[in-house]
Length: 425
Image 1 (cartoon, rainbow, N blue to C red):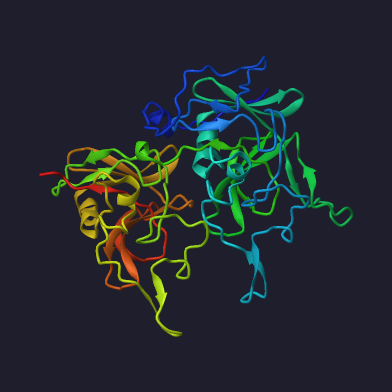
Image 2 (tube, rainbow, N blue to C red; image 1 turned 90 degrees about the vertical axis):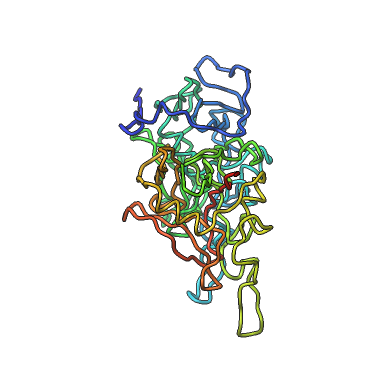
């Protein structure tokens, strides 16, 4: 058997760092392990740093070795054919005189487009790209045959293992000129693909998947949304008070305390949830002026942003206050200015997620992960409106150019939120 251990020097450096997981369901029950060394429970705790719990089998299956059902990305039911014409998330575009992919969101985990949630209920969801990467890099992968089915044995840091079958893919038969079959199962027993919930950052027609092959290492790669591939769900951890970040005192002159992770996240390296300015709920679809809650038509030729205040920190429009409460709020432009000027910004990685370690005057630090799946750029919204009434101030950064600065972004554009608390005097 071939045995793969995917590690790097940076992993060796950070592997011993304790990461805070939030809301995970700790249990003293021992996993059920069969004679092959495979956990056969529906919930499998691999001992991952994030504390995430994986399903023991695919959607549509009842045991680890079964392939289960196949889905196009963003669809919640299996089907007979997997082609562009049969894909439900397309629409006619008068600009191109053709049908184009519908933007159903950059992240569909736990939304109405999530097949895991639809098929298994609200306790389960599709994994994100970050969660697939954690599975790849934190676990040992072994080419394995389980009950006559070829695939991979995935062993976590706690030595518990789950099985992932090489279930292939359903797509148009490569020999379509002779035998057109858009439901043809190909490559099963040799390789397999598994959807995650994260769409490609630069092409609406692709999303990320886990690619496993008996001829190489597992990887996270992009794939056409129309293809039919399985889904291995992950246990959903509701975002509640137990998922509120910790206060971090950076020693700033103002005494402002910054949160240890983003709103919607459960650990410092997670992206969290992105919001349009002044909105307190994530969208399932596109972020545009047409979908922005505080944009109105004055008449047939004039549109404008509604006046919700020049500083929404601590108001009803403040998503940090609404989600976390207890004195948490969105930072103002001045507070981001202080963070940029008073702290050292070091480009680094946590759990293979790029971002900046922001080190305060007293040596304490916070980690700001990138907010776009390209792995290079981040955008964090402030509570302050910009001079242009259609924009707000944002702290933006780039790993490529090693810069962080305050700039203005249009209000409808989705940004991450890093909460703050004012020092009590």
